[in-house]
Image (tube, rainbow, N blue to C red):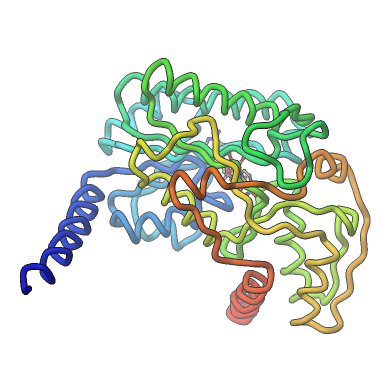
Amino acid sequence: MLLQINFPIKVLDNIIFVKIFKRMQERILIIGSSGQIGTELVIELRKIYGNENVIASDIRQSYDEVMNSGPFEILDIMDEKLLRNIVAKYKVTQVYLLAALLSATAEQNIELGWELNMRSHSHVLDLAKDGLVKKIFWPSSIAVFGSTTPMENTPQYTVMEPSTVYGITKQAGERWNEYYFNKFGVDVRSIRYPGLIGWKAAPGGGTTDYAVDIFHKAITDGKYECFLAENTGLPMMYMPDAIRATIELMEAPAEQVKIRSSYNLAGVSFTPKILSEEISKHIPNFKMRYQPDFRQEIASSWPSSINDTHAQNDWGWKLKYNLEKMTSDMMRNLTEKYKTIA
Ligand code: NAD
């Protein structure tokens, strides 16, 4: 009887021990770590893998929390030689590539958008192809879809005709991921992030940035002028969910990662009007005006909701934050943040 009770506990202990042991072997390089996702990902990965084992890097310095908690390197990802030197210096085993020009910014500088997004990706894929690192994370985006894609509950496999330079780089990137996996056995993993919402770092020039700006302006000014029309439905996700999804995918056993191009991830879909109504529950006099600009055309070509059953079935993905929970958490954290600044 005693054995029967102890056996599963022992197995569980071993699994946890194996997981901790495996994590201790990893050295992780984050490229583009000073941006919206990188800032939060570095902090979370350092909690899991240890401060010294997570190397942040970017062309610019980051927030104090990142700069003071572990190694940081200035790295322009276009410089392949420097990238390889840093990988050798730290004996890097995994790379998360976050450096990119985002949708709105890339539309205003299409050459740099193409050059940076494609070159950075091939530099990192080649690291794995040459056996210098074991695993890669490279994010895709809902921008891979276009106006010919079914807009509601967009399936994993569907028509993909992106109309932005950013979307074209993400779609090409997905093809390269699959190619490198099939031809060279590169263990590359990817998520098609929806628009991401977080309070720790500023967004970097995407079409969904309104959904972050609105919280700041609601707290500081009580009003917001939105650059998208009120009924523009888009899939979004709260940053803690996005970071957890990223780490869960990277830690999933390789055989469970059945899609090597990039996984759909649904998040929570809403329009600017619905978000403003949710914020009004916290700031009753909040006023919203709509002044759509060039970003409207981009947003109109993207799906309003996503089907992510493949991520759920393959590696057990489960969303935690709905609109209500996310809004409350954003309001609480940002209000605190502004109090400490004042
Ligand atoms: P961001 O713009 O906030 O951060 C990108 C970082 O890359 C910046 O810190 C920038 O300084 C750095 N960078 C730029 N050029 C570089 C270079 N030559 N070498 C090294 N670093 C360089 O972007 P983000 O929101 O953190 O997005 C990260 C990744 O996730 C991108 O690939 C983006 O396409 C993807 N993504 C983001 C979202 C979102 O809502 N944030 C949605 C979908 C996909």
